[in-house]
Image (cartoon, rainbow, N blue to C red):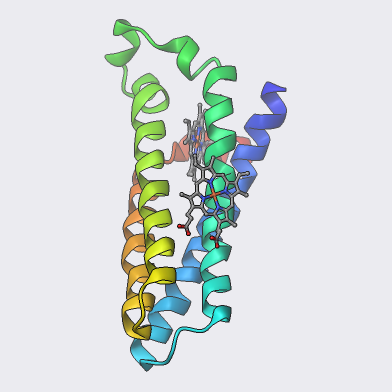
Length: 145
Ligand code: HEM
Ligand code: HEM
């Protein structure tokens, strides 16, 4: 179960990054063209939202199954940068990113003016993506996949 989840989390991360980039660039396009936000634009935003939501649920389970997650939490591990990344920084930053992205999507649905709706996706997804990029365990990621 651990290996399966680890690989799923590892490969889904590509879809998360691709989906978010796609949503961000199409939202920027709509914003710049100042066109109305139609249902197709909401679906484009979903391409970023859905992999991100799936990934965080899998990450949460992985946290309690992986030897690098909750099982490794201790005062001594906190002093080690790599251990601390998995125990604390990665999960916390990712959850924050997921919240930002979800808020961006929910606002875009609620707002009335096209420009503001595109901007909501662009700004909130953009901030979320930056947070994600800041706390991906890059070396481990490229070693596994
Ligand atoms: C397998 C996991 C999940 C998938 C595939 C998924 C998928 C989705 C989808 C498709 C939407 C958009 C719905 C809409 O257009 O209104 C959405 C929205 C949302 N999801 Fe998830 N989700 C998952 C897990 C979760 C979990 C575990 C939470 C919270 C604990 C969550 C919280 C939310 C919230 C707050 C929204 C925003 C609703 C809004 O538009 O106001 N999701 N999710
Ligand atoms: C939603 C955005 C997230 C992304 C893009 C992401 C991405 C990644 C990536 C690329 C790795 C490295 C995988 C590898 O070594 O091949 C990883 C590992 C890990 N992630 Fe996430 N993650 C996310 C959310 C989360 C959350 C919310 C948690 C926990 C609550 C979590 C827990 C973990 C754990 C425990 C590992 C280490 C797994 C192991 O190798 O044993 N992740 N994540």
